[in-house]
Length: 175
Image (cartoon, one colour):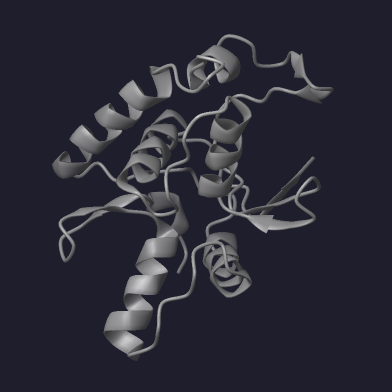
């Protein structure tokens, strides 16, 4: 399993779309184990994703360079720059232009997804990058994308491309 987590999201030929590691785990459960998929954000799924991720800890983030992923990364980049919600803010406005400053007493981080899944003190438990993305969307009062949606996978793919070469820290602990 060493290196697996550092390569996601990746293009999946079976579904003909980009998928993240949680979706790959569920796909393997269904197709190879004849088991039911776990609910996104469930403790079981986050636990197994964390186990897979820790096998790659310290390795450089190396998202897929598959040509089919380029359009996914590009859509994620556009989505990252796009203003949304009632507050009319984009991800880039906070995480590129204002990182290091504080929002509600918390330091705004750069948007490097190298620690997910992670234990967040504010959650008092484990959570995925998609959970964090949805929290940000909720904070700007935007309509939330469903867990596992192509839109969230596109954002994950873009963030993974930005983090290329950074060491994987997962599972991490953050405030």
